[in-house]
Length: 209
Image (cartoon, rainbow, N blue to C red; front, side, top):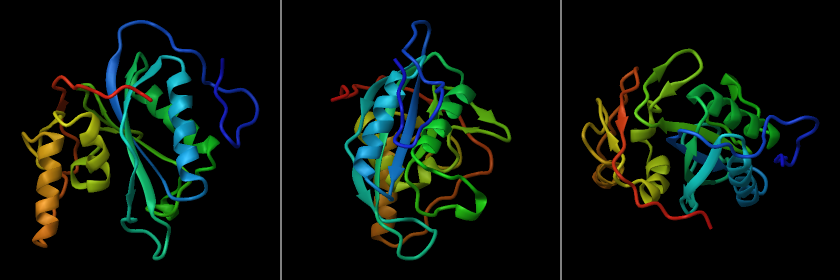
C-alpha cells in the first residue's frame, strides 16, 4: 500500500514497512502555510507507511514564532517524530525531501527561513556522524533551537548531545539552558561548523496515537 500526498501524482517511492536491523532516528517537523496540522498528520502517516520506516513516537505540536525570514509570516506548528528505520541516513533524507515536495514545499537558498507548507529535518540517526554536501548529522543547529528541542524533549528527553553546543547535556537539560538564557537576555551558544556525535540513552517513548 503506498502513501500519497495532497499534491502527489504518478508513481511513489513509498511502500509498506520491511523488517530487519534498524536504527532509531529523530525527525523535526514544522509547517506555517496551509492546513498545518493536517499536513503534519499526513506526513506522519506517510512516513510510517514508507518502506523500511516505522514511527515509534511523536510529540504533541507546539505553536512557535518564526525565526528569521520575512517579517509577518504566520506562526509555525512544530513537532518531532522518532522512527525505527532500516534505511541509510541518505535514503531517509531522500524520503523526507520527497514528502516535503508532495506537500508543496519548494526548497531554495532564496527562501531560507521563509514560509513553508512542510519542513522535515533529520536531527539524529543513531550514533552516526555524517558531513557531506547533502547531509550533516547530527543536525548542526538542533541544540540552538528551542522550537526543535521543546517537542523533542517530550519524546527523547535523555538524548545526549556532545560537542561545542550542549556538550554532555541531555535534550531536556539543553532546553532548560536555552530557556534560562532567554529569560536573562543572554546570547545563545552557537554551533561549530562540523557536526558532533549524539549518543542515545533509553527513551520511554509515547506510542503513536
